[in-house]
Length: 173
Ligand SMILES: [Zn+2]
Image (cartoon, rainbow, N blue to C red; front, side):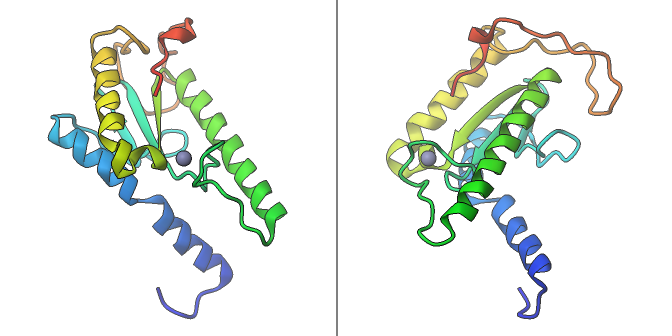
């Protein structure tokens, strides 16, 4: 990164680095790929630009950093001692936006799976990834999650997707 950047440019630059191809996300991608899953990345036409988009399973996977996304009760989510109010407000905004985007995605008929950075630490990684593929296989079998729509279109104005009203059928990761 060049030295001379306006604060705005720097912010843009930092958020780009923060947002794309982060290591936790790469762990999930490599695992999925090795297990035969195929996906799109950073689909900008969907709310929140989901990290991993699996069209066939009508599922998006968000790999969230514990700090930026405010993982409640997590030891990796510690507000800085300086400017604490600023950070608290910022993280709260991120969380509200995340929740909004999940709601929007579900309303569009997508299954939304959220994985936290801390769930990919070496000691728990294998269990998390196995749980993920277990969840995906149950979505594939139609045991949980939303049904695949007959037609698929990212665009606006598509017919409403079929919805599953029973929230207990939500993938739970
Ligand atoms: Zn966490």
